Length: 445
Image (tube, rainbow, N blue to C red; front, side, top):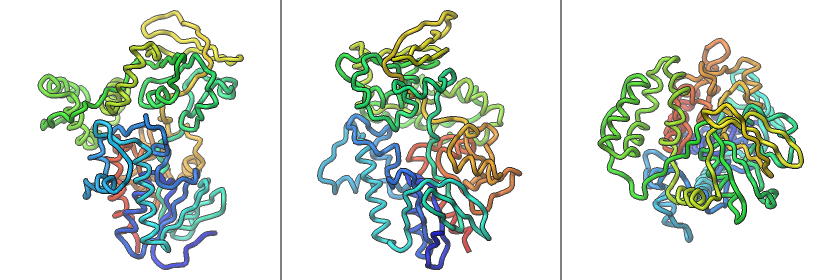
């Protein structure tokens, strides 16, 4: 069992993407006694899946001036970029790979400043148990004892939509997880289906674009993410409150007099308080009826990728369809049956490659993540009332199967969506990481 030798509280963080790294950095900056162990199954510490890409077409979806890792240092990223020899912004947006380099630099700085207090373990966390006043984590490479544990697992792994049977999932012509897909393995595919039409689809379409290849994106509503303006709009200063229906009316009134982007930017600042003020019924109603519209307006494309996608649409390289998958069959290719929205009769077509672009799994109870399964099975945590993630208190502390605080066990990021809703983008996560670090230190003896 790996137990650091020094005194002081020991915090184990499972997951070393943005959320895990920034929780660690904030802990180490705030205390000279705390010790931190980062556990990351991919063995890549810092960038995480989101920023571990070298594709120049994959840009951030937030302008660089709002992507500092520290809420109290808004120019931190810009200052770092000013010292880098080669990078460029496109309409105020940098590539995700460059942002990954920024996070790597934060990790390197933390290792330089606290080499004896930061430990990196490239292994998969598989289970967790109470041990005395702390926790014991079993990994694929040993065990780690810690006083407190943070689950920073990021988005759940994608899951295939209904209708995708095991025979299809086993086919080399089907890609269940586009984030772990080598496009070179599909270089001969001419007719490609992308299931979904959101940001994941955009990444896949840009990656798979090739002369002579035809891409088709199919989703329930056939909605594409909207685009950021090349120049930021004049800020909107109105306020939002009330039920989902009341806020929808307020949005419509606001967009009649202001740029819709500015309206949604303003709404974003209130989103957590609004969400927490809604009843379970109101939250469910929002998810059922308004979430698709929220997603395409709130989670926008940077102008460059938006131009690429619209060029592909205009040139016939990409087609967006609205409908429902009804059946997939694997032969030498994949036969897909789908029913257009509002129609009763299904359409059949054969595709050389089918890529699941529906995004992260949205139901925590269906997760196959070993740590999540273990925590739920042992009652150390439980799903939030909507099943989006794990149930946490106001500061990210897990509630156990009986609804009591699971002392010393915390979650950050998308796992806390049920409590906070918007907890996926850097402007939200950086504040959560800072606040969680402060809570952990205040709870430590």
